[in-house]
Length: 337
Image (cartoon, helix red, strand yellow):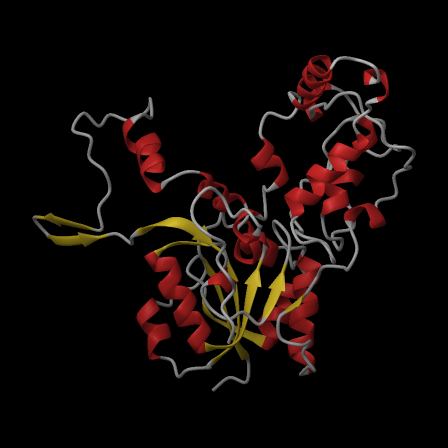
């Protein structure tokens, strides 16, 4: 009989980077092992889903659910882990706000299948076979989970207790949560965001800021940015002004623009809209005064040509939870418990 707290880690539609953040606990892994029993984690523990189904409801102290909801399997596991867990955490950007998997909401399911199985130059599929949920073979029936029309966040499917931002979250933030559980609480109010601040990445960035006026948008591969000056002032699309703080401005520290993985800052309704309005306010239009309207339009278009992917830039991590939510359907509200 063990007194260790039962913990689960599960991924939906994601890359596995959140599991790496757990491995990055380093020395704290010993403390983790001393206090917690990993009862379900498909990439580390050979517990089967039926074993989880057999557990009493609420038997798991906390589940870190990373990844968005893309398939029937993701949705079924979201409901199962919600039922079996006292505390369900949307762990990382995909579970919290959809992240990169949700960019597929800009296209239809049929478009994805066509690109992956029919028009892909590396595919040899002369009969045009597409995946189905059920296929009969000599050995029996093979089943695949249904591929949903759109990607949703975890909170758009089941009630979530806490949200942890980041792609992936920082390991010290994870340890802060686990320490709280070890100490026995008290836990923050349900629905709280853990590991993030209340301001923006710009507020924790040490770079010098001046009057922002840019006459072109530049890509990181085009030049070596000045290491002390605001990256946005140098023409790089740094999302710091539209991104929640808490990471320590790690990307700007490494001379790379923030790409927005901590999501929407306090008081901002839509990350992409905030960044678009910021960009509109810093474009240098002084040289355009007195020019014909058509000349102004061409000049602005030339500046914006430096950004080849608007949606992928402004909504890289928050499309599923944004006002737009993609090109398919209406906005999906969170599920309240």
